[in-house]
Amino acid sequence: MPHAISSTVTHFRRSEETTMAQEHRLSRRRLLTISAGTLAVAAIAPATPALADQLVQNVPNPLLPPGKRGTILYTQRDATARRGIWNNPAPTMGYLGGPNFPADPDDLGPLVPLPGGFREVFQFLARAGFKQVEFAGYNQHAENQGGAAPPLTQSGRLLRENFPAYLDYARTLRGFLDEAGLEAIGNHGFIPNSWPGGPNGGMTTDDYDRFQIELEFASILGMPYMGTGGDPTGSSAKEAWDLAAQKWEAINDLAAPWRISIYPHNHADAYGFLQDGPMVQVTVDRVTGAPLPQPQMVRGESGIRKMQYYLDITPSTKCYCEIDIYWAHSAQHRFRWYYDWEGQRRESVFSPIDQIAAQPLRYPLYHAKDGERRDDQPVGVGEGYRMIPFGDPRSDIDYDAIFRRHRPRGYHNPNYEDDTAPGGAADPGRSLRHAVISGTNMANMAR
Image (cartoon, rainbow, N blue to C red):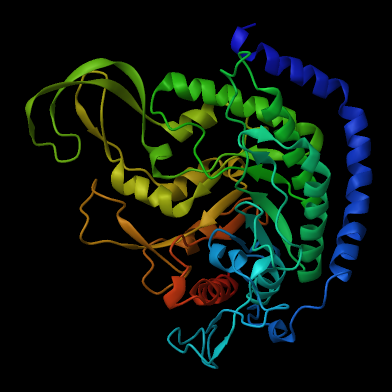
């Protein structure tokens, strides 16, 4: 057994030996979670009546089932981070839309107090037509209902003494979700960095314990998936992806007793080309094909894309992924040519739609991030797109085709995301207005 994974395997054995006991405690915990969360909510003052009316109505025979419309809270990160309306003598004021909104996105409506913190934002998102939320961390403004998340680290030290309070906070968040009728589908949060290569050649004790408490937190929230905002590895080398595959299979084994799947999340680089060949001499530019001033030595590529290689070498029933549709289209724009093992420039056009359709069960989650083509960026230069609300008329991403090719129906969990939604101090209500626009457009897609 390689020394680099020996201590992790020891943890696996310990986990396997206690699986039955954990499953018993887990099932009991799940039974207690709803009541504990509900009590936590009941202990807090009622939410403001300003968040009462439903904003989005379903069309007959919707393309997206109502229970499968989600958003990642990174899109509304400004709203969860600010102090909300509850118990606030001077709430943030902004625009949430007038009587013709969202059909007329320029109808900003009157200046109103803006929701803030998890409880108020959850209620707003439910009104905007969402059923699922993907967390982007668990922090909110400390003055909001439920308070701030107890810290788990300080100056590099793991604060095990805060574990009970951290789990109590999870029960409070679960209560907020249940009250709003929302479900937690995943989280971009903690994934151990020390596997492998830690001080003892494997996962450190602190990373193992932190990972376990995060799994328990996710279990209380009812998450079937827990992940990260990054790729399995940032490298392009085949050897790094081989190691990443071992790591992600290992941490999925650790999460199995909790019945939680651990997922990576891609950006454009993950669908670039795997460097898996010998060093070769090249004489033309990769993007333009123009002659180089002088020959260069690079590592040859077979044309396999990095994330596809990851899927090829990991178990299909264990290692799942979250694909970001915007960044996958950006990869189509950026990564069109590669140098083969002979140093010749080759063309290969990536299809995000076909990527999902060819292996649909590997992508239970994805980010429904919409984009408009940038005419000022030729193929191979820049991102190629700019982010816009989901379903915006400027969209150049065919989500109708993506959703129609969903198989099996009701399996996938698309989460609306727009990194640029927050409007800052100039327009603090923008991310919530964009949520209404996006939720409405999701709901209005008919079969």
